[in-house]
Image 1 (tube, rainbow, N blue to C red):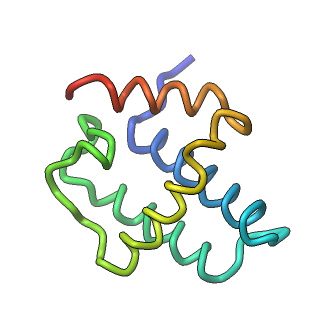
Image 2: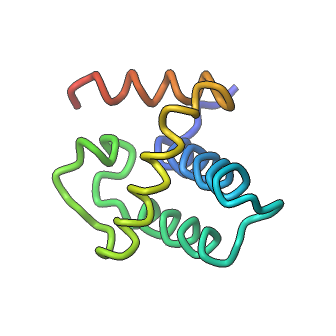
Length: 104
């Protein structure tokens, strides 16, 4: 079994968060155009991350690479989904929490 790349794990996590937000908060059955655009943007930013596989969590990152409008959107998603993530994807939530608590 091969270990996933850190950026790939981050992409999966942000996608899970955006999908939960769009489905549960906004009531959509599939990603709306705004959530799809946010997901595409987040994936592009992860692909371009200068820290590569040593990437810290976004909260700990010294470089703020999101445009202000996208930063506001992702913060809104994370603020709403964060407390609920443990119910939908407990292992992903736990792994992310541990990364947040561990200095990089």
